[in-house]
Length: 325
Image (cartoon, rainbow, N blue to C red):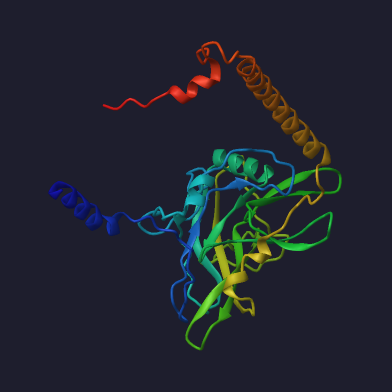
C-alpha cells in the first residue's frame, strides 16, 4: 500500500509538467499593441482544382528560401487533430501588433538559386498553397465557387504563385512574394478584442528598385516577380497588415470556412455502398441461421429416455472457463 501511494504521488506531481495542451481551445483577449503570433504550416496542394500532387512540404524546406525568424523556427504545440492531419506548425518572422496597421513591411531579402527557382515554379504549377495561422485560425483566401457562385473563405491557405496564360498559348509563372493580411477583430470592451477572421490576398511584385535599399510593394501589375531558372534570383518578401472591426462573435468565427465544393450527392457510390453492406449482412445472417438451426433441430430430436448427447459446436462456448494464475 505504501508503494502504491508513493507511485500515485509521483505521478500526480509530474502531471502538470507533461499535460497535453490543446491550442485554440479557449478564446484569447488581446490588448491594443499586444504581439499577435503568426505561425506557418506545411505547404499542401489545394483541393479546389485538379489535384496535381499528394505530397506536403515543410514551410522551411531549404529549397523555398522563405524568411526565418531570428534564432530559427520553433516547433509549436499542436492539437490532436493537427497531429492526425500531419500539420507541422512552426514560428515565423512576421511581426504583427494588435490594432496597428502596417504598410509594406519587410520580412527579408531572399536569394534563390536557379535550381531552386525551377523547383518553386513546379510547385506553383501544381497549385501549392501557403498557410499562416493567427490565433488558431488558418489564413484564408477569398474564393468564388464556379458552380454556385458563392463567395467563401478557402481554409486551404493562399496560392504560392500564379500561372498566367497569354494570348497565343504562352504561359508564365509568377511567385507571390507580398501578402496583404486582413485581420478581423471583435471588440469586447475598450480594452480587449478577439480575432474572428484572417484573410490574405497574395500578390506578385518585383519590389526591388535600382538604387533603393527598401522595397516598393506598390509597383504596377506589370512589374511582377518571375523566377529565372537560368540565373540566380534576389527579391524581397514583404507584407501589409490591416485590422478591420467586425460584428461577428468569436463563437461563430469558423462559419465562414464551412463550404462544400461539390454539393451534388454521388448516388452511384451511395447505392453501391448500400448494396455491398446489405449483401454482407445477408451472408452473415444466413451463416448464423444455418449453424444455429442445425443445433436446435438436433437438440429437439433427442429422445428424452436416452442419455443427453454431449454438446458440440458453438454450444461448447458455455463450458469455457478462464484460467487464472
